[in-house]
Length: 164
Image (cartoon, rainbow, N blue to C red; front, side, top):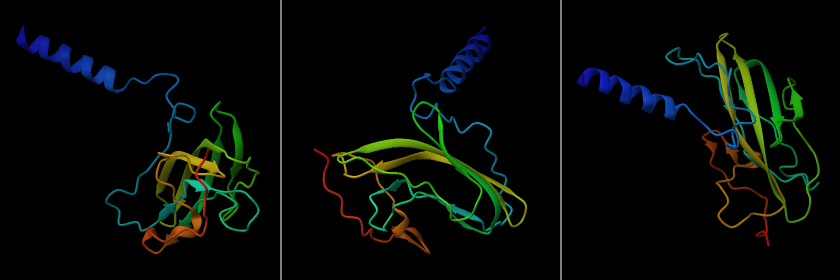
């Protein structure tokens, strides 16, 4: 009897931990279907993805795009909050450039599936932000101009006002 109760309890816990609400912020892309098979292979391929851009035409962080190391092919897609595709590309260094309204901070979602030079797969997804100002309490923002050999460790040249 104890064994049956333990199995039922564990099953219930697993059921609820795999559950998510349909209005969950990541549900528009879900990251489903992404494959990463580089674990333990010594593959040194990388995907660097900034999570913020400021498409204001100043020549700095105006587009959002992934930067790759030792990747031979990829697909990159950006979705809005309604799961509509707003941009897709498989061309290296091509990114999404759009306009930004004054005093705005908009959330989008990205999904990347790439093939490494060693024929392994890397999948990556997450949120990204199109902005003209920084809201109080905003998440950590990483811009393309911060990318160094050590990752997003540099300083950005974008000076953003605080959103009203």
